[in-house]
Each structure stands twice: as C-alpha cells, then as structure tokens.
Length: 388
Image 1 (cartoon, rainbow, N blue to C red):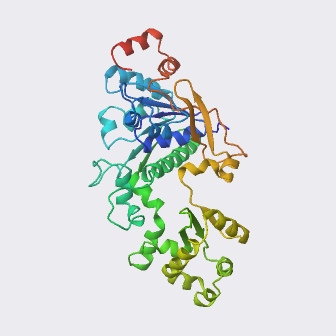
Image 2 (image 1 turned 135 degrees about the vertical axis):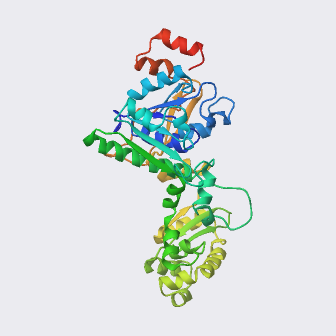
Image 3 (image 1 turned 90 degrees about the vertical axis):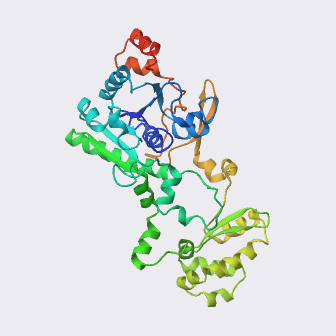
C-alpha cells in the first residue's frame, strides 16, 4: 500500500513540524530522504547521547538519512543534484534563511520546475512576528489554544506537542493537493504553512462561538454543550463520559445512577448545559462509590458513550487498540526493537508498507549519493573535506 512510492521527498526540517510533515508522506510510501547537517543532524537527535532520542524517533520513521553541508559550495552543488531527482522539498526555517543558503523556492525551482516546495514557519513569511523564533508552545499560546486548556497559575506545560503536529498534517495535505494539480499542469508549487494559522484552524469552534456572540467564551462551554465529563472513580482511575445532546442518553443516566429527580430538573439539553457545573459535582460523588472497572461494566451494559481515561502505559492492554494493531515493530541492527504507531488511515482495508526504523545520522549517505550519480571517489572526497 505504497500510494506515494513514486514520490521523492527531501526533508530538511528539524524538531517537529517539518519532520512530521515528511513522516506523514513516508507513511504512505514516499521515498523520504532526511538531509541533515554533518556531526549533529536534527537537533532532536541530541536529546539523548546516542543521537537517537525517542523524540527524534517519533517524527522520523520511514526515512533515509544523509548528511550534507549545503552551506558550502561543494555541498550545495550536491544538494542541487539531489533536488533534480525530487518531487517535494520540506523546510521549516525562519523566513529568509533558505534564501540566504541558496535553497529558497526560486533557486530550487530553477533546477526543477516540477518541484513542490513546502516552507513551514511559525507566523508566516512576513509581518510583525515573522522573524521571531517559534516552537510548539508559542503556537499554542498565540492561537488561543492554550487558553482553553488551563485554569490556574501552574507554569508547567502538560501534554504532547499540538501546534507542530497539526501544522505538519496541514502541510502534508497541502503538498498532496499541489502534487495532484501538478499531474495536470506539470508545474511545481510553493506551499506555505504556518504554525499560528494551523493551530487557529484546529481550535476554531470557540473562536466561531465568540464571533457569533461577541462575548468571551467560557472555558467549559464545549464540555457543557457536549455533556462531557471526566470522572475519578473509587480507585483513583478516571472515566470519560460523553452524553452529547440526545435525550436518550440522559434518560439512561438518570435511571442508571438512580436520580429520577434529574429528569424534571434538567428536562432539555439546554437545561443540562446551564446545569453543567451542578451535574458535574453530583457525578463526582457518584463515581467515587465504585472502581473504574465496576463503572465500565455498568456503562457498557447500559449503552452509554464512555471510555477509560488511559495512561500511556495502559494503551497496549486495551482490547480495541490491540484489535486494530495500532503499534508496529521494526528491528534496528544497533538499537533493537523500535516501536511506532501506524498511520491512522486505511486504504482498501490495509496500511502496510515496508516499514523503516528511524535512520541513524548519515546512515544512507553512500546509497543516496550513488543514486544521483556520484562515484565512490567523489563521495570519499566530500567526506574528507567535511561536506558530508
């Protein structure tokens, strides 16, 4: 199921947004070549001493790695040879950096007019913030996303990256759209995606609510309209309960929890929205009376929408996750078994491709450079002068 097997992607990205974009394309079978600086490579590698950190692994599966110093004239000449063989280039530099290095869109389009060039930035190519450094939390904060997920003054940030990864998905979608158009026109395209707009798009619902009402949107309003609750059980494990708007689920809740008075007190969905805080307090007390496993058996029997709130270490033991075979394993000759998650989309009931473990730094140098016509002696010379 290598739907993109004829597509070659050059991934010049570091950290998350650029590499995750290329990883999405790689999960559909694209030939992704990660182009890294000699010595250190992607900055995420260095989060562990072996240059193979879990953070790096999460964003760089199904790729090959070469090292190439394209800031040097001899390295740039090799890079331009590589560009001639590519369909897509992905960069996530600050605006203007690629142009200074001689690898901006105009320069690479001159080498390959069919090239789809994806430039990922924090805030867009220009504007008052354009040259600020941008990382995931900056995108979460500026877009309004972070304000929907915190209530106190604890300075610590929880959760995995959001802005970077959402930006990567938007970038991959735009790249695929540009490749589709190219099939007809034969023309390459400049794709520009920024973290700020991608995260705004991801969290659009409360923004539209504000536009419609002209008022600040309460932090719990989505939970109130969805009748969604996160409840702690007797054994301190948690359950998510999500009744949405259908009256049938509310009727089941009133019966299951032996609260007949709730039927009259909250007869409509809007009554339940207005009573969200009070309902939450009562559910807290109720769920503290049984363990999570006991409540799960009851909720499943009654047909209510629920799920255990898994800790990461619980995922492997969940029956549905096991049934879907969400996680796969590949063997690395140096690091042993490497695990990752499949792409979440299936085509014709499958998603299997020849999986590659995340590459070591420069692992595929000789292989890739020979593919673009360099001899072994030329590769040796580039290595001798530190260009690769």
